[in-house]
Length: 308
Ligand SMILES: [Fe+2]
Image 1 (cartoon, rainbow, N blue to C red):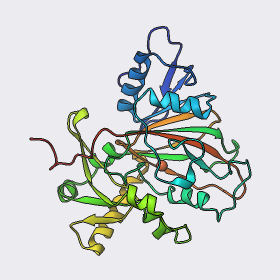
Image 2 (spheres, rainbow, N blue to C red; image 1 turned 180 degrees about the vertical axis):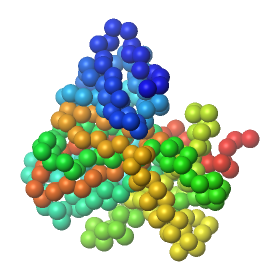
Image 3 (cartoon, rainbow, N blue to C red; image 1 turned 135 degrees about the vertical axis):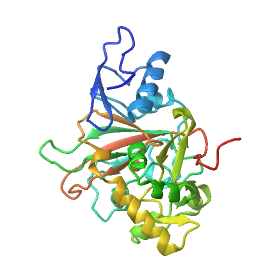
Image 4 (cartoon, rainbow, N blue to C red; image 1 turned 30 degrees about the horizontal axis):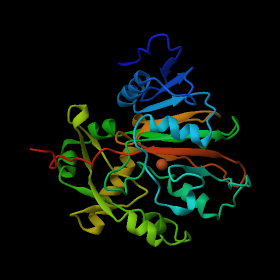
């Protein structure tokens, strides 16, 4: 494994690879307490290098999760008024109500999780999509249940593996991302509110993302949960191209699937990987995950949007 796995001096942290494609697991780090600046810088560097970090064995109140996340940088607020409880920066990924009752599969909070069973990157429907997400496992599926994992697909590997002609075709193209797309997938969801419509209008982002902080390396930047249309192509051609790319990004050699343990705090780089929530029997098993999201620091840059 490449750098930087050297842990801060006398930290007591243990780091190991999560799998062959990406990700590291850290034990011995308590995210409930304030971290040294050097520890946050080290975690940032790890995320940059490995795209996914799992901090095992956490016990975090909502306030502690927010405090740990804020040490990395500013958080996103969520546009959905009805999926927040105590804080606008918290997103509950759960089939259990705030009162502790399991929700029926017809409940829109459960249906939203089905939207996120498609490959996506969090808040791609914003002009400035997020930097990273932190998802905390409060109540997870029993160990004998084999589904319900969270999948990650490495968009650098996916881009690199594209045929040269397809890379050239993608270079000038943008995908249209919009929050309302979930309603097309699941018309039984309540309509987008005026608040949501005004806060997150449709945006387009380059399909080929250029990363100035990674030596201008290129990756794919797309989603299957917030649109399927390509700006500049006919509807049919754009959707056909989108289908082709969705099939490509699911190839196992780009992917890692995380099986949740209680107390995992999984952090991923939304600029580098896509993720998806694997299905599980939502009517049978309870699951409670809690997300905070780190804001991005600028719009998505493509091959034609570099300064100079
Ligand atoms: Fe997500």
